[in-house]
Image (tube, rainbow, N blue to C red; front, side):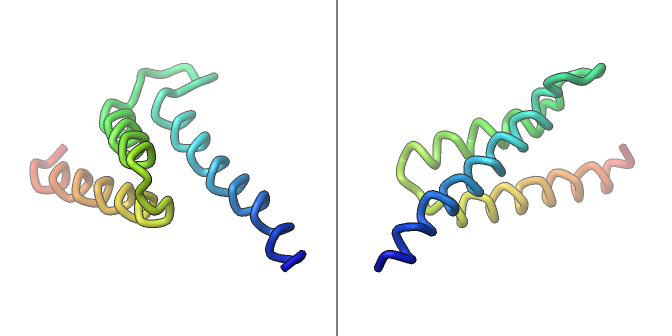
Length: 79
């Protein structure tokens, strides 16, 4: 039980780190570019889903699927 209690903060920190990394990429914080709208939208959707108590791992997988679908559509459009 003690080991599991010790792992819980580490797991929470890893999930939070992934979320912050996505936000930084989406909003281009510290960069010299423009906001990547598709990533900002995906981040907002994920944030809403997490607020509704969805499983964080499922939300991360869904974010990857949404990005994959976006990339596929852009490839079909030739952009």
